[in-house]
Image (cartoon, rainbow, N blue to C red; front, side, top):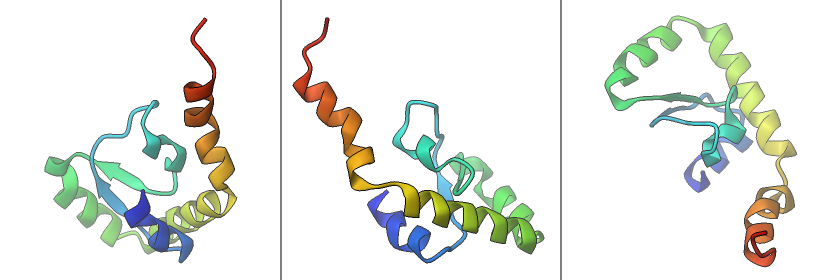
Length: 87
């Protein structure tokens, strides 16, 4: 995510390689970043190249998600996991 931060903050459309499951860090950016398997990258780029309005909408969603995601919120879960012993 650090590599994507500047792009998200500036409202850029992003296609990123890799799967994004519900437990992954990238799940927080679902809807604002397009995640695709590396084998599907070419098809995804061709699809979005022909849809400028969709690209703009996804980029704006990514910008809003990034702007609303504070460092405190991002660290809350990992820090809690370190400090609170398992039951």
